[in-house]
Length: 145
Image (cartoon, rainbow, N blue to C red):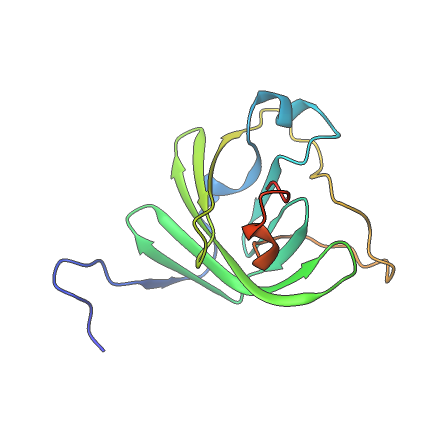
């Protein structure tokens, strides 16, 4: 299959770029309030959010400056596994986050003093996660990212 005329072909990437690594907040309060659900942590091959952690087994460049990570995600509450993903577009100290297959998109700002991402609860298995992603629950308005 070939790319459509004028479309940017996707290119595999080994990891999320360094400029996207770190803790991001939906607003200034999310960066400073430990109780906020609005933080996202991006690592080389994972992203962590309030509701889930995704470890990317596939990272690709979908357009100039836009990276998509896909892989297994684990919900923090209950430990349910699913396939998910997140697209990240760095805009300096801002980042646009979208979820493939969903119309949800959020803009985050870089947190200057990163605090841990608040999670809904630690799974009963006691597993610790180092990344995160989006899932079908992201389509519900009641599940803020």
